[in-house]
Image 1 (cartoon, rainbow, N blue to C red):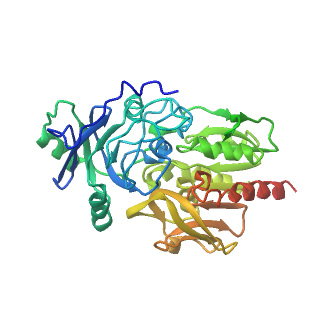
Image 2: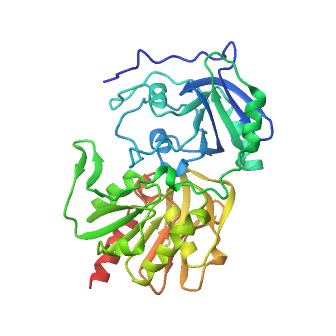
Image 3: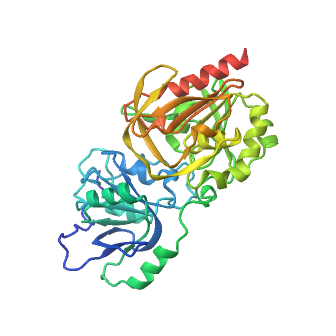
Length: 398
């Protein structure tokens, strides 16, 4: 049932005057039609090449501090609902700073839609901009890197352009920023929800075979669902939890979650905890930021990428099986494989640019991947990693 389709505005393009702007730190101004929330927000502009899953992208905590440009021209045409949400912490503010799309949003056309995409953006406080040449913006990012910028929406078309230029130029960027506190939970909680099915929606499972503590750096709900589906009884712990607090829960496994920001900054408090947990030889599995945290705990380092990896069509090879997987990516920092110690073996590599996408330890039961195996772009090429984690816990239990 469409709840607010009739109330949603239909953007007119070309507009008599721009009602939204994207102002880059170098002073370049892109004009368009505003969508969603009004106001202004500063962030790093990236592009995402996925053709579907815009709700999941815009609610993924890993996008905190970023303005997402969608390369696929028709975004929002299947509407929105309250089920395809990746933010597991309802108290967290919207991590993403804005959304840029090419074509005006059409009325929703999907049996699961409950509202117009424009209304959904408003409800989540996300500023949107349409009518921009997203291909040209994507080419700019590929040539020059992800720029800092301000996205602004004013229905009357009135903007203080000099103020917006200053705001964009003065924003320091994501390097050196720990954004985990803005999206992660601050309290421990239990998770029992299982993946969505067409017949029954989301299910519930309790009393799993393995007790897993998931350290929340901005964890996605689908990751927690797939851990539950793999037989895990999941407790989510805040990123500030100490090793003693985590060990007191007597976990069979530790999960290191995805999240936003500069890994080196989050690592200042996360790495000592992870080191202590690794010393206990508890099976450990990390995804995205969790992969980077594991690398840092081993003495490795992370580097800022020029354009990052954001999309659902990235080929990655798993050297442990020899197979190539089509995976979902969302990261602007990467692990430097040359910085890893001898006991860390590279297991996955991007076939786009050769960057590191996975590692495993040779002396302890721990592994991690840079991509998102839960996101199903292949569609389920990488789900085996959750089974691999369960098998690791089974083996550790003896």
